[in-house]
Image 1 (cartoon, rainbow, N blue to C red):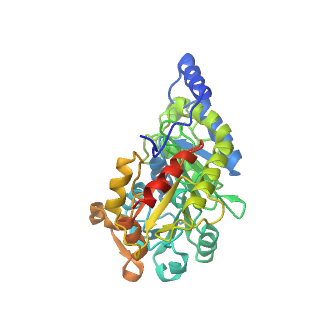
Image 2 (image 1 turned 90 degrees about the vertical axis):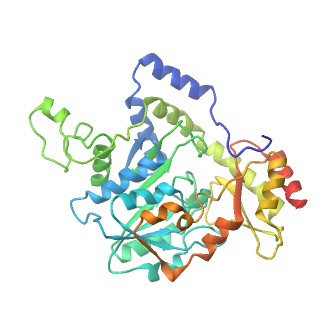
Image 3 (image 1 turned 180 degrees about the vertical axis):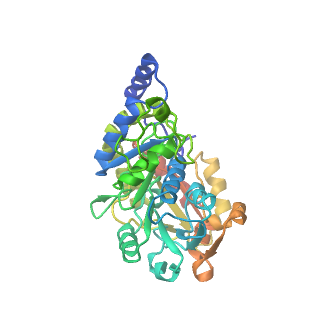
Length: 388
């Protein structure tokens, strides 16, 4: 493939980190996972980090933590405001914990939740807003934070696609009461599989630690507020207090994360340089709607939406991209309302429709960005699309 959707960002450092874990013969989460958590929290400016087995697991554990808070827990039937475009596992934990989703359309150009509709989405049953920054582009997280504070709502930030992005100088993935990241192969740093939860809330931190590993107390600090400690070391090691999961990461993934995090800034710099090249090539092409940068994007990928008046068809474009060995895919997960699985959800749609999410679903696609120079690939993309 001439222009892939994703590529490896590993070097000798990551391979050596794996070998060191093999040599130590400790494969489940241990000191390297703890070190990665500490370094990640420090990098993002948060108090607490919990590594889990994937970004999807991070979303699941985080929603569970909010449902097990001692005061004001989320409860079945509570309403959550969500964007119409995101990955499927943004929504699944909400459904699995019995929450009702209120879908809000996205802005056509940023592809993020249209915050002008937040007031219309609010009802007496609203308990939380989910903010998602699509493909590296910061959503209006500052405005969502203010809205949640004004209405005493939880703010959940799914930042799985946007590590390293900033809004007003603050890292995305730090605006929420609880925040999630993914370290899957194609994302900004890659630990094979993996995810991270960030929070400044100590109770949510302790809940996440317990829920990550079977709902037991073994990984909790001695002074945790979740339970009274007993003077029985044997019993405490196998004491279960929450209906948890096994979302633990591998020690290898933690060790890789330590090395990948050191490279994050340099890889983001290359991604942003690639983005400058992409915008220079396509900003004057009125046939396509490009994603408008809000704040400082970390440029996961490059989206193109076919302008309604262009006369182009997506099928025709895809045929030429395939012939030229250029990878492409749906924008994130497209409009989630358009997927068969929606029949399992309790939901409604603010305003009754999501025209911008529908347009992205039917007429949009993205091509990859990489942590290395892709000028030849972008120039080839421009040539191919010029021939359409």
